[in-house]
Amino acid sequence: MAQRDFYQRNPAVKTALLPEEGAVLYHADTNQKKLLNDTALFIWKRLNGQTSINNIAIELSNHYDSVPINEIVNDISNFIENALKDGYVLSQRDIPSKAKEWEEYPYINDSPESMDLAITGKCNLKCKHCFYADEMVARDDLNTEEWLSFIEELGRLPVKTITLTGGEVFTRSHLWELVDAIIDNKMRYHILTNGTLITEKTLEAFSSGKRRQRLNSIQVSIDGSCPEVHDRFRCPGAFERALKALRLLKEAGFPVTVRVTVNRYNLDDLENIARLLLEEIGIDSFTTNDAMPMGSGRQNRQSIALTLPQQRKAMEVLVRISRRYDGRVMAMAGPLAKAKMYVEMEQARATGKSSTSWRMGYLSACGGMFNKLDVLHDGSVVPCHMLRVVLGKIGMDSIREIYKSHPI
Image 1 (cartoon, rainbow, N blue to C red):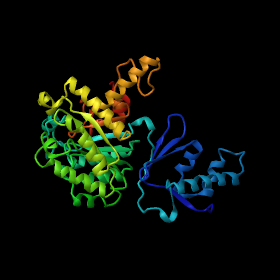
Image 2: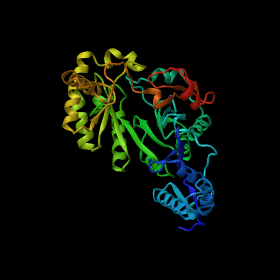
Image 3: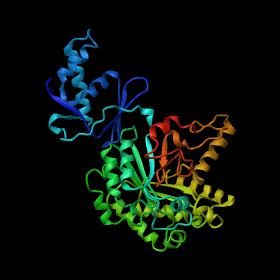
C-alpha cells in the first residue's frame, strides 16, 4: 500500500456520529456495522479519493506531535487495509464516477434505525380481517415524487432499513423506482405482501441493479393450508396464487418468510399450515399473530376474532407446534407470544426471579417510536400502523424533529 495511493469511502456506506465520540459505519450492501473511534473517524472523513495516505498522516501528525510520522502512516495503512477487506473503502481504480456524498453526518440518535412505509392504500383483495381497511378508504396515496423526496430525507439520516407495506405493495405504480431510491440512499428493505401478484416477471425485476442484494426479506401472508380455509376470509383464488408465489420465491432462493394470522377460520388448521410451510414447502420458519379488532377485523369481529377459550386453545396448539419444529414457529405478538410470557410469569412466581426479556409488573409495549416510526400512505407519520396518533406529515415535518422533539 503506497503512501501516495488514494482511497474513497464506499458510497454504499452510511456514517452516523455517536453522541460522545466516534461513529458507526453501516454497509448497506453487506448489512454490517463498524465502530470508529475519533482517530479512525478523522481518517474516514478524509478518504475522499483526493487525499493520499501521506497527506492524511501529515495532517494527523499535527494532533499527535509525539508520534513518529512513520507510525502514523502504518496505522492509517492498517485501517484502510481492513476497511478495504470489509468493503467499506474503495481503492482508486474501483471508485465510481459518481459517488454520492453528504457534507454533514447525522448523529445516531437523529432517527430510528427502521421505518415502515405504507406506500399505497390500494389492494387487490378485501380480507375480512384487514386491520388497515379503514385507512385505505379514508386516505389518498402520496404521489411518487413525494415518496422519492421523503426517501432521500431518510438517506440523510441513520435509517438502515425500510419495510414496504400497504395496502398491497405490488399494486403500487412506480414501485421499482421507489425500491431503487431506497438503494441509492444507502438503505436495505423488506416487503410485506399477500403474494397474489408475484409472478416470474416479478422475480426478473428483482435482478436489476442491487434490488435483490439489498432485500432483507419478502413476507407472504398464508392463513390456511388449503383454499377452503385461506380463501374463506380473503377471496377466491387467493390461496393458489399466494402459494405459487411462495414456491417461486423459495425455489429461486429469495429470503422469503411467512406470516400466519390466527383467527376463528384457521384455528383448527394450524397443524396443517405448519406441515405445509415447514415440511412440504420447506421454509426456514414462520411467524404468527392473531386477527385484531381493527378495520375489517372490527366490522367482522364476531366471526374473525378469537374468543377467550379460542385464545387459550391457540396458545396451546402453537406452543406444541413450536416445540415440535424446534422453535421454527415464532411470534412477537398474538397467542404464541402470550403463551411464552405466561410461562415466564409462572416461572417468576415459582422462583422469585423476573424475566430479563421484558419488565414484569409494569404496563409496557413493543417499543413503538423508540426504535422505529411508520408512515401511512397519505404521508402521516405515526408510532405504528396500529397506533395512528399522527405525529407529523412528511413534506411538512422532518423525521429528525419528530423523533427527537415530539412531546409524545
